[in-house]
Length: 224
Image (cartoon, rainbow, N blue to C red):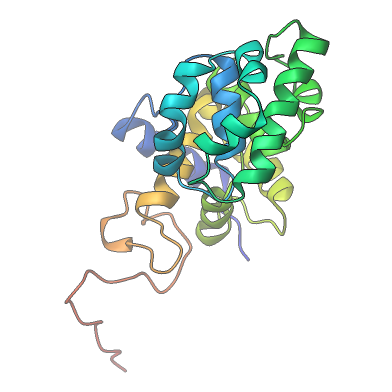
């Protein structure tokens, strides 16, 4: 697939910035620890569902020590509405204990240390580093992977391919917020089944064809 040039990429992020200068993630959290737990729980689950499940959990256990004290059974009970909840509960308990044992109960601001925690992969580490520690990382989830490929902004066969392509494409001044803009764009406009091209703010640069017409408007007939 063709790749957009740097000028087009810059125009796209200029537009995103004009619309929403300070985009925010949609997971609720109190501190670095609860953000880490929320992101671990968000795999194959919606942010809305995670927020509903963690509201009471984070009141009871806002730090690793209180999470360990809560225990596996109680953690499991609180998150049972989330997909893959049994495995996730074990990971939350294990990562909490590891944070106590290896990091004095603090969440490290280091990708390698984060990825060593149970249930934490590169995407989760990048989210925590970006949102809490304000590092210019790009967390490639399914939305961002789709947008990167569909638009031609950062085509790639794997999430890492897309991440690396974006680090080359995104102007430095937009790096901190880039993954939020793209994730939200994929979640609400550039949807998986049918992108809403008729209301897309970056459609003039996007390489996706044919563009989806507005509802109830027939496609123009081909002449010639």
